[in-house]
Length: 403
Image (tube, rainbow, N blue to C red; front, side):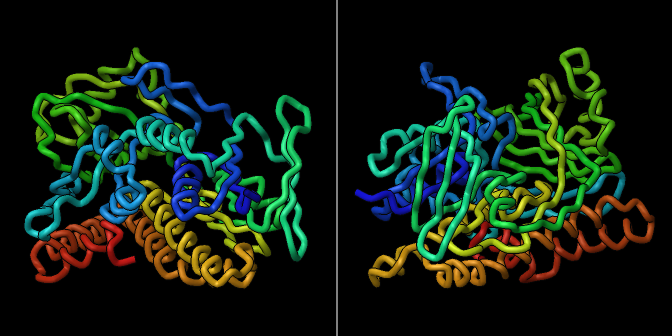
């Protein structure tokens, strides 16, 4: 069968999209720059550049997408549901709480470690006959004409692949080579922050509660993980301050900082895993479709992790794109028709812009320590907690059900 689609970039978005396409009976060539690991031990998920130390809070919509793909049973073994969300600001009176039972939903989403999400996705891709996986290759050229896209790729300095397709989906990350090759610029904002990411153990069980704690140091997210006392930490802090929290010699110092910022709601912070740091910036492509190339994932939009919306937004993009491609195939039309890709792009702008604006506003709003702004935002948290009708609306957006 002729390969109909080429995906450049085999991270979590690229792998998920490849599986969506294969499920729709569309053949795929998937190119990934970094060699994938071999999984010899079924109890271990080694890190890969795309499946790193971070965790992902999968929204209810994302869970539904993986259920449709037949993957959720395998993923659920490594995920834990969020049944409550508590939002507070250190040293302030404002607080808000979302409870799944009150909102009449099973959960607000599921937290999974990226290493396990990547392992499950990659294992499924390797078993899928419609997907040809080509890893350890670097795309060095991407050109297109009215009818096809042409790609050249190298391995260890030698040209090994010359490929062509009616459609190329570029999911090759924030610094996308493909995006540059098609001449698409970006708007970039450096938040002057890095995210400290790790896993901790606490003396009190998490009871499936996720916390967002705004502090002068940065917004601390504490999410439940499989295992009664394990929690994921994502803590964006000012760039340049992270060194004092990295390295085994600083374990206790990090735990003390968590304790001071978070208080005793989780009991005592007893153990911490290795800390990793990731620079934070907003990177938005000026266009997401040019000719027969469409940008996906972080190549299209990289956003702040403050509300855990980035990957969920990308997964909704992928789901909608596949729907557009299936409509083309049902009419026996050109799968890479530029006008269809532009229609897809237009269909996604409202959801994307809403999420991007929300995440950016939260970061900027809670980073400002002006006493008047602090009063306003804490009053806003109280209002959110008590005004009828607000919680269900916000919860549905957060769960990806109102995209």
